[in-house]
Length: 124
Image 1 (tube, rainbow, N blue to C red):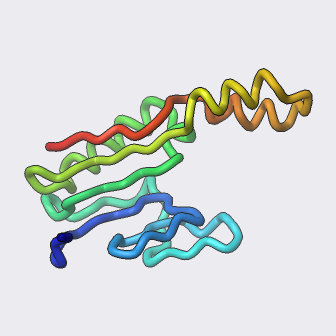
Image 2 (image 1 turned 180 degrees about the horizontal axis):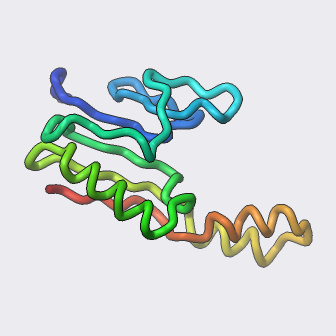
Image 3 (image 1 turned 30 degrees about the vertical axis):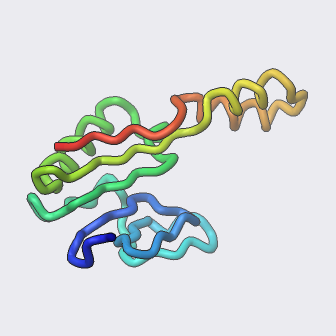
């Protein structure tokens, strides 16, 4: 059973609006639904306030320096025992797209997202 007083963020949510989360996005993608309009790089959760911070299919857009700053912000925003969940592309699926496609744009789009597979969860 889910705790009703949990604070869970879905950052850079895009088209992935999730009930029970505070969905945050900059609104740059057409049709995006969100609760808070803000750029993920500017968002700072209140210290020790979040039970979960979810970042799905975004980290490939952050260079290492920006990613480190995000991790620092998220770490300080999480409660003790809080979770940082990072979801990335399916590596095997992307490899199949790259090797099977003859369309340069499709191949390029897959290469851009070629940064990992699955779901990583950190508990602090």
